Image 1 (cartoon, rainbow, N blue to C red):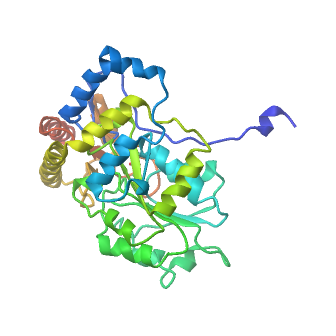
Image 2: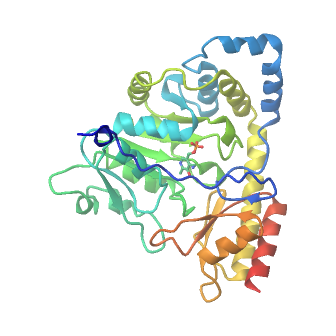
Image 3: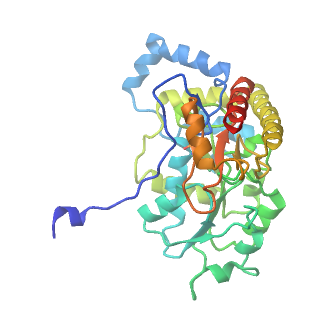
Length: 368
Ligand code: PMP
């Protein structure tokens, strides 16, 4: 056998384009258009001072205790209930490895964050994609053993785990907390992960339910609502037992993942709750205005509770693919997925009011 036959072949996740040209209006990777909290800038200035800078010769605190304590205080849980990582992608990857490599199939929606099947394939986890309803909603019945769950599972198997984002991506639709709880309550024999990457833009968080269900893991990120995609910080909240299992795998993989700067600036961001509330409220307001403009132009879209809108151009006028290309020609980048069921839609990140005005103007010109 050749060495190439002995190599693991992975099919990597494809991220949105990161243009080098700064004149692009970049609305394709759900970043925040505002800077991080002012405390982050102050922390960076402090870290640039000679004494602080010299700390880089040392390994960082592998428990990231400062950041964990700040998150525990903010969310009213014990520090032992928090796990932090290099973006929520890192937290999610470790979670797949810890909770889902049990041999039984993991369930997630057919239209969802496209990293889930990448991790499942990488870790050789069997998985089942549960179709969303016609209107792109997750139907909780599909995940209940007393409902449709068994119809999705191969005969004789039970669920090895469940994961879905709430709100879902790229649809933007949120499920109310009581519906999410139905899924968790009915699946006490596997770990249920709720990926709340976008929850701060107006959806219900089930983070408080981690006190009630020891098999629930809630994952969040600093990349969207805390305007820190570049710092790579994500975290998970769960029962002490669940978090301990996750840490044991993480510390069997790579102990020192979060660097000193990330720990310090992440802490500064968590401590400024007023700024966090201000920018999330602003993005929600801009989103609702943008929805009105889209509607007026004849676009249709699920009612997003995130920092993006998943919108279908007026079908008789233009395809999503063409609109994507035409916007790109005007130096406006949005996301287009060439996949069944969603190839008629564009995922458009909510930027500043000025950026959204420019998008609306460009769309009007394109449709004229
Ligand atoms: N979950 C979902 C649903 C996402 O859309 C993203 C952003 N691509 C992530 C997790 C990961 O974000 P990050 O690694 O930046 O925290």
